[in-house]
Image (cartoon, rainbow, N blue to C red; front, top):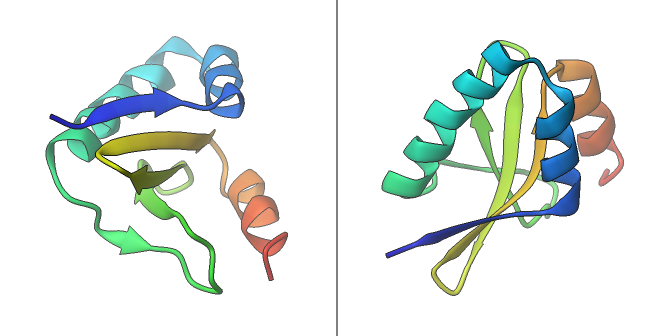
Length: 87
């Protein structure tokens, strides 16, 4: 059974978002937990991305049967800024 672990960044990002958005993210956490990863990021970034809404994204990594939730971005601007820091 796979285990979901949250980084300090992800915990803070979740704590700061509105309750209705948390509910949407929760559905996607369950999807990540129950199915294999779908989209791996480009440019050598060792993470996967889950599209939550048109704007929101979850960044996660899988290692040794554990899924590490690294970031929970509610806007595409935040996600793009993080993503571009790797280029």
